[in-house]
Each structure stands twice: as structure tokens, then as C-alpha cells.
Length: 231
Image 1 (cartoon, rainbow, N blue to C red):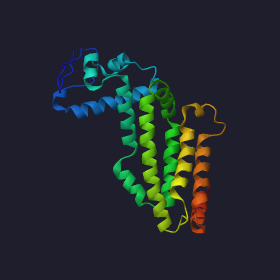
Image 2 (cartoon, helix red, strand yellow):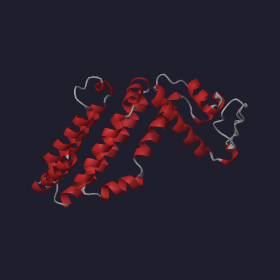
Image 3 (cartoon, one colour):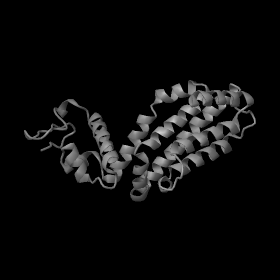
């Protein structure tokens, strides 16, 4: 029921709700992007391990032949979904805006972003990815490490220039210690054994990190912002 071409037209039965209509008008890249978004929702709703390639075809109302025109196998599907999630969370314009912020404020925004991620079902998906798609897990983890290092280094340098952070910082060590703490929380096995609310743990890690690198000016600014949140 799907024509296997670069651009395809989905023809549904009257009782079916078609997923793609007049796909001739859409480019391949946009079709794939739409598919990945829907597959991502499916993974979040039912779990990555529980969702088979047949489930994906049923959800998208396409044949397996059509699905395999876009993805080599389930590893490929998982990788493409995770890469799109990263890209959606890290739009270039958002990163540039973050780097224009007061460095201390930017770190607090990162804290809020991390808390939001942990409040979703992403950690549960990461457990399945690590266990059943280890190569994809390692690839995504490495991309996250590189991104975190680059972004944090720029923020810390901005904070030093503005007088919020100390000039005598060993940037590489500080970033290493901080990212290790955060990645440790991100380990799927840790999720079930954590004894305190994740929001409190993340906030505490970030506040301790900021205090450890701040000048008196930076600590004063942090305390002002903490008081505003508590009110």
C-alpha cells in the first residue's frame, strides 16, 4: 500500500486514518523527520524495548518495506531518534542566547533544563538504550560530553571576565568533576536507587558547583537568586 519511491503517496482504506497524504509534495528529509518525531513519541509512551519495528509500522501506517527505506535496522531508528531529541533540545539559537546571558544565570538555566529532562521519561529510555543498544548509547554519551565541555568552558570564561568566577580556576578539572557528577546521575541504574527528589539533588550539585568557583561577587549574586526562588 506504499509506493517505494523517494517520494511516496500513502493510500488508506476508508476506515483507516492515513499517516501520510500526498507525500509526493514532501521531500524525503522532511518525511523522515516527521517519522522520527512520531517514533520518539511512541518510545516515550510504550518504552523503547517494548516497541518493535512492526509496532512502528502499525503506528505510522506504513509497510516494513517503506520503513526500511529510511532506517537500516532498529539500532538506526534508536540513534536517529536520540540525535533528533538532542537537536531539539539544543537549537543553535538557544545556545547562542545562553552564552549571551550572565554566566551565573546561564548555569541556573542549565539546572532548570536538566531538571526538566529528568522529569520526563527520557531516563527510562536511556536504560533500554544502554542495555539493548550499547553502541548507540556510547555514541550519544560522547556527544553529550563534548557538548557539555565546550559550553561550560565558554560559560566559565565569561564568568571570569565578568568577575563572578575566580581567575585561578583549573577549568578542565572543574568541568570534569561537575560533568562526572551529572553523568553519574544520568546512569540508568541510578534512577531506582536515588533516595532524594531528583530536583533537589540536581539543584544542590549546581549550587555547590557555583559556590566552589565563585568570587564573593558571584556568591552574593547566587544568594540573591536563591532567595528569589525560595519566595
